[in-house]
Image (cartoon, rainbow, N blue to C red; front, top):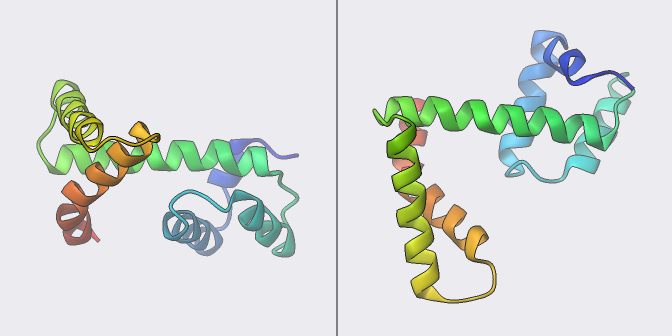
Length: 114
């Protein structure tokens, strides 16, 4: 199986499609995306796609934080505020709800950057 760096060095058109598929799926459906890459002629595993997705999502978060003018402390504060909102709502999936709140909070900025 090729390493993550191999996915980073896919032909530009295919890498753009990969990035779009990952974003559209919310960085989920990794098995389906790996199967799509195999159909495109690249023998990759779900694990390889997952590692690439984690790096892509992190890079996206950094870009978003920079566009909001947040440093690392600001990002931590924003995440803690989202976690506090999620905790006040109750439920079993605190981090999942916090992630949804964070997504909602930054959605207008994220859309403006696209």
